[in-house]
Length: 383
Image (cartoon, rainbow, N blue to C red):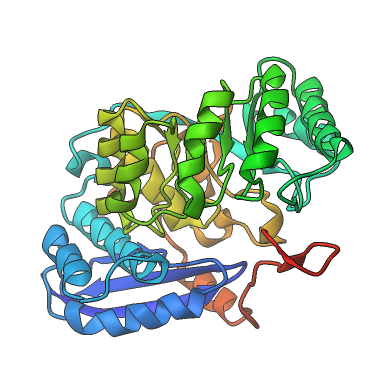
């Protein structure tokens, strides 16, 4: 079996899809995207094509290693996202070749479903209570919300009170059984963290996510010593080498690699195993499309430490486009009683509707960009 062609599409709302074709008629799909830098990643995929055409797609580890180690400059969000999409497609091909789900090729599933959470509240969180009730009515048992809008290094007591009131509203609407995860997008600085996270303990969140920027991981020691809330990080880390120091430091409770950013299924599985050796849980990051989610579910299936799965249905970034729009059988990735069922079909276990991909790609008028925020004094704020 040989790779004969690689096709890519930028599609709404902010995703990209990739198709690898072979000389035996088997093809595989990947999702090589970096939100806000889609075409940059697709350009990297284009440059990698010369390493792929003519290769046997079943030699995944060798191909991955050539793409990663064959470049003098390696790692980082762009290159690892390009490799991720290629890797996902190779696993999809291999599963289809052997007529087995990827989880079977990774050693076999340890679970048949995984708890899922929805995303509520938008970039600047508001009106949380009614949204929590809707999520609960839809069968979700957990959700994630942004904890704050822009924050300075220090804030007034009223600003802290606003965050506490918002989470209190969520807890009241969801009841004691609803899981609440609070994402801080790296917007909180260590001085504010001392006050804020202690106040949030009363609501018993599932976890606090990215309490500080990835560049300030050393601050996690101080934060972990001052709060009992589990700490989750990882969406802006791109390889096992990035995760190793934070796991060795021992201040993180949950890792969140993104399988469309961290080198795909191959590297994501290694990160999951590395985390398990430190008794750290796995909650794969996935505010993306159908291939990214299907890839996550295959890794969730074989990872004993996987605890919950993000998915983008209803996410505010998506507008009127959803991940189910791109697949033939929408039931495969639907949430049932708060859980996502692990697909058991060959490869990724989903069938992409290429006609819809082609149509939607023509609607991609411009590339999505994350907002650039400023504080009242004109300084740039963390989004």
